[in-house]
Amino acid sequence: MGIHNLFQNCYKGKRVLVTGHTGFKGAWLSLWLNELGANVSGFSLEPPTNPNLFGIVNVEPDISRKIGDIRNKELISSTLEEQQPEIVFHLAAQALVRQSYRDPHETFETNVMGTINLLEAVRNTPSVKVVIIVTSDKCYENREWIYPYRETDPMGGYDPYSASKGCVELIVASYVNSFFNPKEYGKSHHVSVASVRAGNVIGGGDFAEDRLIPDCVRSLTAGQVISIRYPNATRPWQHVLEPLSGYLHLGASMWQNEGRYLGGWNFGPLDEEMITVEKIVQKTIELWGKGAYQILPSPLHEANLLRLDIHKAIHYLKWKPVYNVHHALEKTVRWYKENSELSMSDMKTVTLNQINDYCVFAKEKKAVWTMPSEEIC
Image (cartoon, rainbow, N blue to C red):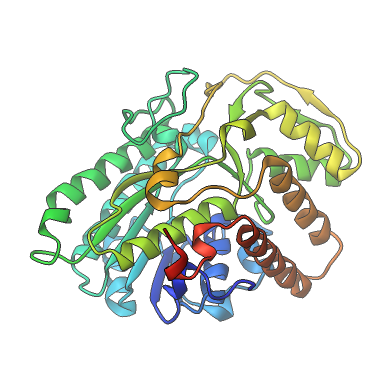
């Protein structure tokens, strides 16, 4: 089966715009979409780190891309006018909690006004039929309670990053009600808009600062002790391909069912896959083959417990995760170890093989997005 012939072939030949395509998740998504036969275009700043996944796997020759800032209203508007996308995945964002403390203005301007700029451009681009806005599990008002957060729970955010994502969710809901109302579909508009919230995503090719796995890899590669700040913090860890499969399946469902599947969607692991930061570090060291860690205090607030309820996606989309946390860590650590040993030309093959392996495994698990349309319940 491999990478092709998935999502009922919905993306083959479609014009798909990915904002934030040079980022970690954006590069994985762009690569997968290209393999699905989509005509992919990208809008983003230059890659945020050096090295970066976008450059390592050499995505650039496969897509039409424009370097630009999502805060530039005129530029994002002209990009949509030029590319005439049919489907838009919006990932362009300031995505780091600690950076949001250093520069809250940049965080709110990028995440909030950037999303408004995109939605305004969509309103003026008749070709667009499906829009998926990627936010975060941190968009919820985190009360540190034990039950997982549902799509109907209040938005919130203690730190600037989390608050900005809560704001984005309110903006998306406002635009759906005001301009893309499903009751008006086929009358005043032909656009379906949804937002997606994923947990703590791990996978090969993330080189950002202040993220657990990249920090671990940097320390392990240098032979240094790993420093962690919140050992008991519990997060919905998942491999990057898990939420991306959810986004792609949701987008295909929205395309094939006009005016349906709108609103917010959680894509995360099953409850039993929620483990602490310390256990993630211990398992990473075990897979790496050596290493040590220490616990350091941090003056910044960070939620201790965060879980997502994915029953809405399971019930309405028939989507569910296929990798457990061990699969996710094993694939992630293997990618980084191979990256330290192989050439950049080989790493594109490694990355595509990981997508292929995930798709084959999902097929064995009877994931809905791997089935022909006539087999879907």
